[in-house]
Length: 133
Image (cartoon, rainbow, N blue to C red; front, side, top):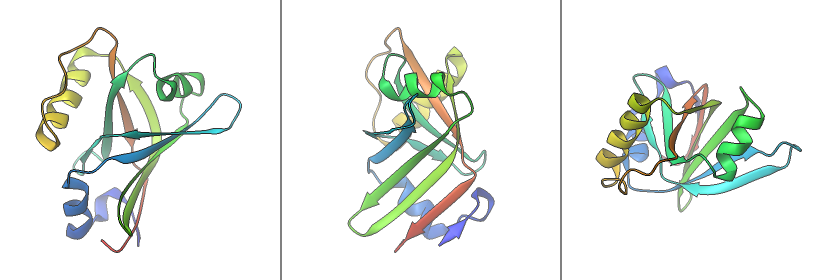
């Protein structure tokens, strides 16, 4: 199944609402991939996937070193999977970080108390692929 954010079907939406982690892939400055497990949120209305994290993480440093680069989230559960791909931006604006934390709390649980270098990575999803959802 290949789709765009505006044509996501209900089975994909339901799967993306389940409590799973995803593999988050960014590219290091030398082009090698970096993959890390993350929790994330998906907003089909805006087409944004959000990852709440810290500024010092490798994934954030990768994105800052390659502005405008794409990132990929791949949520799996057995042989069911969905990938979300698009350009990723690191946001430090307190309102955007708070929105990321709010959405995280709705999908998973309230995030850890705020820490000084919290950021949110926003992925403007341009491509969605999946299987068995």
